[in-house]
Image (cartoon, rainbow, N blue to C red; front, side, top):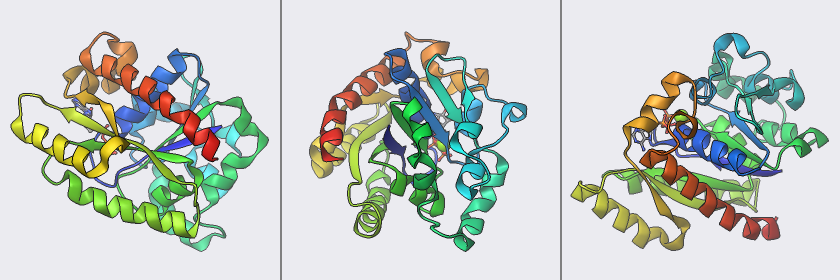
Length: 260
Ligand code: ATP
Ligand code: MG
């Protein structure tokens, strides 16, 4: 199972929207996908229609070792897409994990067993911080998908993220790499957006995916219906962009497999 973390410590940049819709796109083209909701807000779980009552064992139990991977998985109504949901317990995990052995490797250890062979790829939706939850995702992951909103402070936040990735690489997970940076909420009519996108491409080169995700109201409506935009309206510009992003991402995975 290839493991990809969806991370950026900046809030509201499109991590969850990207995780849900890339996961759905990959499932649609035949991949067996596991989405792990590692954010106490539980937006990925809600956005996939997993209500509170359907959340039994969760990503919290997986991290604390109270449940095994198989016991935490909930199937979604999308064929081949399963979820490990998040519950509010997870908000205490940043503190509770400090006391536990192997606090940075809890998720990696939980995903290591034979149970993980049920899926081809795992996406981890990270919270907007660089705390222990995100660190667990970075230690477990082969690579990172970084959504970046095209706005003025985008690059500033990015340097902090890159430093953290370097630290994780040096200390815990030398194979961690950035699979790609995805520009989100792109608005062609806004000059600043274009300028930021150009700056990001200058700075990060081919790490930036060619596909950009446009600002599209259908993407923001879909979660309230408990479904990915790709199911809610598969022909809207946002859905089409996420299909293209998933294809581009797949094109980068063979390199990853060789490196692993
Ligand atoms: P957090 O850091 O809080 O976890 P996030 O990085 O996961 O946030 P999302 O929840 O995916 O970000 O997106 C933030 C908000 O912007 C949501 O209301 C979402 O529906 C909306 N949104 C995301 N992407 C787009 C887009 N391309 N066009 C329009 N709205 C979007
Ligand atoms: Mg989120």
